[in-house]
Amino acid sequence: MSRKLIFTSMLAAICLVSCGDGDSGTQPTVDTTDPAVTILQPVTGATVPAGNVIISAQATDNEEIAKVEFYVDGSKIGEDASGAANIYVYTWDATGLANGSAHTLRARALDTSGNGADASVMVTICPCPTGPTYHAQNIDANETWRACCNPHIVTESIGIENGATLTIQPGCIVRIEADKGFVCGWGGAGDGALIAVGKPDSTILFTSNESPAAPGDWFGFTFHDATLPTTRFSYCTIEYAGRDGEQALLLDFGAVVKMDHSTIQHSAGKGIAFSQQGSHMAAFTNNTITGCADYPLEVEPEYVRELGAGNSFTGNAAGKNAITVYYGIVETSGTWRHHGVPYRVPEGHGVGIGSQTGTAVVTIEPGTVIQFGLDAYLHVGYTISAGLIAEGTVANPITFTSEQANPQPGDWRHIYISGASVDAQCRLKHCVIEYGGGVVGALESIAIEDALPSITDCEINHSAGYGISLGGGEYPDPATLEGSNSFTGNAGDNVHIF
Image 1 (spheres, rainbow, N blue to C red):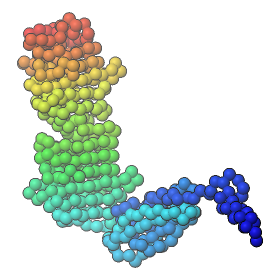
Image 2: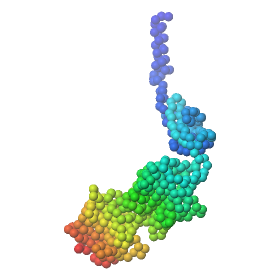
Image 3: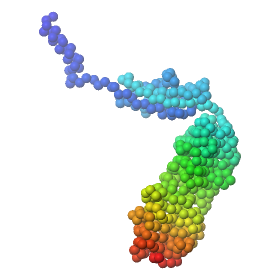
């Protein structure tokens, strides 16, 4: 063969490699992207029965999923190539596995180019495949109650102590016998935590073991100062507690608890109460307290701001369907939300607003009602820096009034705004202030001393004394106050200068 022919053949071979079939010369694209895979069921940490367990995984790819393989403790148990809506399913037969044993489930997704990706979860075979499960001992080491052991029956009051955490899994049913309950974080016994976190479709129930069940069958929960901050209720129902007319939940000696998406119902006393300052619900959203024989919720003034959105207080005792706000100082700025029921300051109690380290400002949402018992009051900036922003609307005014069923002038003291208040942070607009001026030295519904708050479009009615009293070295112009607000049924002047 001539050199010319050899050279021509080489060029043809090169062209075949680089040019394909004579088109643009672009080489085929190679897929190197791994798929994505997630195990949807069961979730990690779940307890599963020693029987058929459905494993489902979601797998996606930039090109196409070929199949998903399923493994238990490293051994392949099966695969699924159907992929309806990107979901791949296999049923694992866990029959015969030891109760309480832990296992690793793995899903491996493979695409049509051979790329792969893995996802894993840990599960435990139910340690008690049949219930009921009885509990009568204090918990001094970490312990988990599982739904597969339902029902859990508490036959003696249980203390959670010695640094232990009691975890109650979704779907658990806990029945408590008469006169029993839970005590968490009692100082002498050590720290403790209760974590009861359910799911929207798998809630946790704490209920009476009596038949028929009735309010006050069991004591409820008591949380003391050594309660760990991980303590939480989520998607729980607590019912028929409040033995001896007490409460379903008691926070004591500075205990802090979180709660969301939960219901407290049919307490023979209050829903949630506290007995020592500093105790509070650190987060409280989307909860319902209903059917209680006393007030649904107690809270210190400082922690009203932690009552979040979505809460409902309905169907509680007549005349007591309110949030009780006891004596104390608000030292942290925050909002008092409109929860559909009044805030109530009990007889002889007062709420102060002020901070030693900054300006504490309470903002009150439109539509909110604050009721005061006999001789109760609200002080803004009495000695320390404070503000009060109560700006309602024409349709949703903010109301400061008496707690009495048949209110009368002088049922409560007054709103007192003094020299430590910050003028720009003291604004009342579209408010109703009524039935104040109730004791000697508080002969007005609003007292202003050495301060320049803005008060406009308010109704100041039925004071046992003056509508507004003014004193000190500076105060708003009396004529402006009288012209910017309305006054009805006050025993004294609408605006009075001492």
